[in-house]
Length: 362
Ligand code: ADP
Ligand code: GN1
Ligand code: MG
Image (cartoon, rainbow, N blue to C red):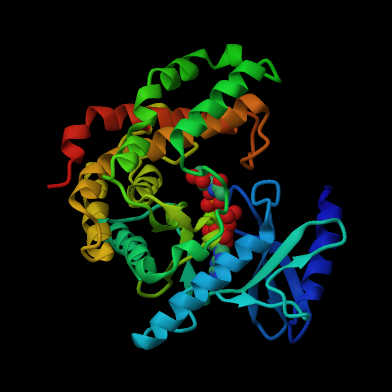
């Protein structure tokens, strides 16, 4: 779709929602890799987040929206009962004029609208330990809040999303197909991945042996999926709820570490800058365990460091697979973007492997 076509569809979609007045502007927003996100502003100043759901990835947008509506109303009810901030405690879905939670446009793209959560900011990096610890509390608390949510009512947003052995098998398939002849250029990265095939099975084995329960988890616990209060810097709510489904607590922990406790950005090209910041790591662990409020078992706590390595390795496998397949999944803004991202993830895995003993939670 060209930029112009996207604008036309975006305006068609905006018109489908019951806004009290026409939006004055609607411009690209945020740093997500998957959906197209826009900020829509009305004359009165009211703001909305409009998103085109990536339906190549989320193949059943209706099910995603059912999950989101169910989870957000559950969280909102809980917040009201606890005397919390009903407006800002979770995302608030704006319905279409015909009462649906999403709009399908004339070419089969799917759109949804959220109220903009005012007075908040999303962050790509934290500036101190406390901020990261607060963020950990928010993600841990999110999991604890949903402990009583009926997991069987949730649709599986993306099959095998954090099944690392399946991600490993996908990489092998991509290497075999090698559609763009890129395999020859990424031999060291492939060797790095192949050497860790056995490791990829660790969490699946722990689950099969009864040491790692399935819980309702977020599954995409990147720092920029938390909104912070612009004045107090405290977390206000957890967003990007597309991937909520049964999963492992240690993966929610691990994905936050992967992104937020790395001393470099996810797409840094100078790999000497990449390392695990152990102070951030332990600050996060402390906040996460407090947020989970005693719900994690001893064996889950023991597996937290493995979750951090697993999510980092898995993300590296996914970036490498996408690079080999021709960048069809993650949004890129330069030709080697996915390869650069893969390299930072693998460099971080290597550093975590060295620091494993220091990552143990006592
Ligand atoms: P993606 O799945 O592509 O990562 P997100 O749902 O995380 O998309 O949204 C992308 C960005 O848009 C977020 O990181 C955040 O900055 C912003 N955002 C999303 N929803 C809201 C909201 N309700 N209020 C304010 N900002 C939001
Ligand atoms: C994607 O949507 P976003 O940017 O929050 C991806 C995550 C990856 C992450 C890597 C649905 O997250 O799984 O960990 O990029 N989301 C999906 O930055 O695949
Ligand atoms: Mg996001």
